[in-house]
Each structure stands twice: as structure tokens, then as C-alpha cells.
Amino acid sequence: MAKKMTGGESIVQSLLAHKIDTLFGIPGVQTYGLFDALHRAGDRIKVIGPRHEQATAYMAFGYAKSTGKIGVFSVVPGPGVLNASAAICTAYGASTPILCITGQVPSDFIGSGKGHLHELPDQLATLRTLVKWADRINHPGEAPGLVAEAFKQMSCGRPRPAALEMPWEVFSMTAPVELACSPESYAQINPDFDQIDKAAHLLKDARNPMIMVGGGAQSASQEVLELAELLQAPVVSFRGGRGIVSDDHYLGFNCAAGFKRWAQTDVLIGIGSRLELQWFRWPAMNRDMKIINIDIDPTQMPRIKPAVPIVGDARAATRGLIDAILRDHQPRPSRREEMDGIKIQSQAETQKIQPHSAYLRAIRDVLPRDGFFVEEICQAGFSSYFGFPVYTPRSFVTCGHQGTLGFGYSTSLGVKAGNPDKPVVSISGDGGFMFGVQELATAVQHGINVVSVVFNNGAFGNVLRDQQQRFEGRVIGAELRNPDFVKLAESFGMAGQRVSTPDALRQALEKALGADAPALIEIPIDRASEVSPWEFIMPPAKPGSFSY
Image (cartoon, rainbow, N blue to C red; front, side):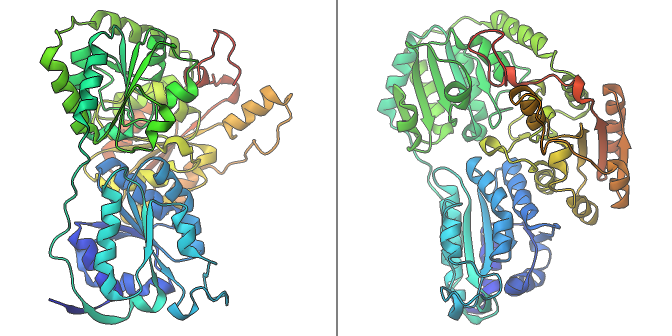
């Protein structure tokens, strides 16, 4: 039965029908009707307003990445959308479903080029270059159907962002609206079981299989571990797949340990992964090696050209592969001693990446196993790919291949908003932290109790090192003059502390997490003391030849 409501109300009611409980947003004149509807909805949807539009999308990204649910944010059209675009781009690259709800110029001005407030030449076309799907709601009655389509697009196949825009006046326009009774349920993509049988046959003779997991396998943790134990195959993760198999399991390998096993690998099984390590970062693979690739996105198959492509849901396909193997394979003897030896050797080798290995160890010692760690594009962040053990799925939050400098702190606030009962630690370099420093105010205002650890070396570290090593020391734009981060945190009403040793970090972090309040810990870093982590991320073809 149709009910009269505004365009803003029709969107809010549609979000509620899809079980949305949180929206990150900054209101503006075009979207007043939406935020008024949110206010009238009471506490059914919590609205968290950051201080910059980029942070609205990063917070939605962190919320979605850590919970597995859809994150929703709202910004004004034009400059608001463009300010949020780096975070939208990050979510697209990291296969994360976030919904952008934005405004538009009044309907009569769309496409006129008259220069109305916040007008873009073609905002919808711009959005479609950034997201999986986008459309315009031209009437309140269209909202339920288009919101449902947005959720379908984000939930089916490869999860990626979607966007909806609504003209200025439609947010406040009243009209009869037919709300959907309940949201649609989405069927998973079932794999081709003939292909699964081919994969099982290929694995029958494999002596040294390796499993590579990415973010697409986050919901298949149990199945991946069962497959790994069945094959006695190491499960390697780089960024998005960290924690799918716990690092304290003998088959849970980080990228540094995985590389030590690479030369012997005869069958590579990719599950929800672009196989970035193997294709982009590790030296040439064994020519005789075969690839089995499980991915929900069929466009990945022509790029990788696996011997056995399996398009389908990671969980269903992995379960099918396990069942096929169990039908006629003999159990394999445990290789625990061998795998433990590889991991111990790798861990010993990576300890030279100081001082960051020691500081990361201190964080890991204090952060509970199921606590969240949000990395950043900085020397400590790069080191965390192999130097920070991860024990549970979704607890290592990364920006993925976009490498978006400055994503970390804003994203961590979204992680905490989605997981209020779990501790969250965000690490940043001084350069990246300043991209979102204003969100300290957001943390204090909304009681988002993230502990931020800022590694301060007074530089964009990678840029500085590259200029020194590759351009005969001609340094430009890489050295930074920073504020006093402790006093800055205190000026926002947040506890701040400066430490200079891993032991002091342990004590400070224990205190900060125990206080259950926003906090900042600064660690001054001597640039000359930093050992580059890159030889373990992009290993050289020949030992000693690495120069990144």
C-alpha cells in the first residue's frame, strides 16, 4: 500500500528495509531533506558526521571492510562527491561495498550547464567511472526500487561501491511511495562442478601446492583451512587475505614466508585473490606450475589464464573442491615440521626490519587476538604485511592495491563504529596522518575510541629514500615539518603521549586501550635507523640485487 512521504523519507525507509543502522555523512543544502528524514527516524539509523567529506566514505569503507556489511555515506554533490572520490576509488579496488547517497542540482538545471551550486558537467557519468553501478532517483516513488537495485549490485558478484543521486527538490518532495515488503535475497554464484573435478584431478599429483587467498575469501576461512590441511599446503596472504588462516597455524603464511616456498610450488590455488604477489611482485614462476583460480569475477580469468578457472562464490567453490578431493584422494602426511621451519627461518630474517618490527611486535603483544589493526601507507604499514601476526578474518584492515596515502585513521573510525566492543588500533606515518588529522575531532565528538599510533620520521619515507637512492640525493617535496602531535591531540580533547621504545609503547598502549577513550601515541623515528621492508614485499630475482 502506497504511503505519502518525501524523497528523503523514501530513501531512509528503504535503507531501514535493508537493515542499515549507521550512516556517515555531512549535510548540505541539497541534502537537507535526507538528513531531516534521518533525524525523524530517531535512533534507528545512527548518523556520524566527520569533518571532511573524504572521511565519510573512508568511514563507510572501514565499517564495511571490518563487518562484511554494506557501509553507507552521504555527501553533497559536486565538490562533496569529488572529495569522497579517493575513498570510493579505494573501496572499488578493495572490492568493498559502500553506497554513496548524494544530491544534484534542481531537476530543471541538470545538463543545462548554467553553473548552479555544486554543478558538475555530468555527475552521474563521473560516478559511473568510480563505482560498479550508479543511477538517479528522479521521484520519491523511485527510491525503493533503485535502493534495492543498488544493494543487489553491491551484493551480487564482486562486491563494489554503488551510488545514487537525487535532485535537490526531490529530497523534500512529497508523493505516494510503495515500499518493498522485504529486501530481496541474493543467490550466490554456484561453481561449475566439472571444473572442480578437473581441479581435484590436477591436485592429485601435486607435490607442493600453495594456496593464495585474498579479500574475496574472507567469508571462506573455515573451508580454506580445511582444504589446506587436506593438501598440507601453505596458505599465503599479502594484505586483503590476512587472518583467513591464522598466522599461528603452521599452514598460515605471510608474504615473506610464502616466497621461501615459491620456487618449489607446482600447483597454485588462488581463492578470491588477484594473485598480486605471484604476478606482480615475486620473480618468475616455475614454468611447469599450474594454476587453479577460484574467483567470483569472471573477468579475472582471461588476465590470469589459469589451467582450471572456477567462477563462483569462494566458500561454495572451496567446499566443492574439498568434497571432490575427499572422494578419491589419499590423506597426506603432516608437513608441520617442514612448514614450521620455513616460518621460523622467515621470521628470523625479517627481524632486521627495524625499528618497525619491534614496534609492531609491541602492538601485537597488547592488542587482543580479535582486535582490529588498521594499516597505513608508511614504513610501519609496509612492514606489517609480514611483521604483524593476524589471527582472525577481517581484523587486518588495508586499502589494498590503491595504496591510498592517508586512508588509515578515518577508516579506523569506521571500523570502530561497526565494532564498538572490539579494540581498534590505527597506525600512520606522520605524512599520511595529516591527510585526516581533523578527524581527531570526530573521534572525540562521537566517542569513537580508536588508539592512533603515529610514526613520525618527518618525511614521506618512501619518497625520501627513493630520491636519495635513485636520484643522487636530490630531495624535493619529501621532508616534512610537523606539529607537536601530542599537544595537537590534547587540543582536540584527546589523551596524547610520546614514546621512544617498544617497551614504552606496550605500556602506553595498554593504558590507552584500558581507558576506552580516543588516544594518540606518537613515536619519533630516526630516519637513518629505518631499514627498508621492500625486499620482503618485492623480493629480488637474485639475492642482494634489490634496490627499491
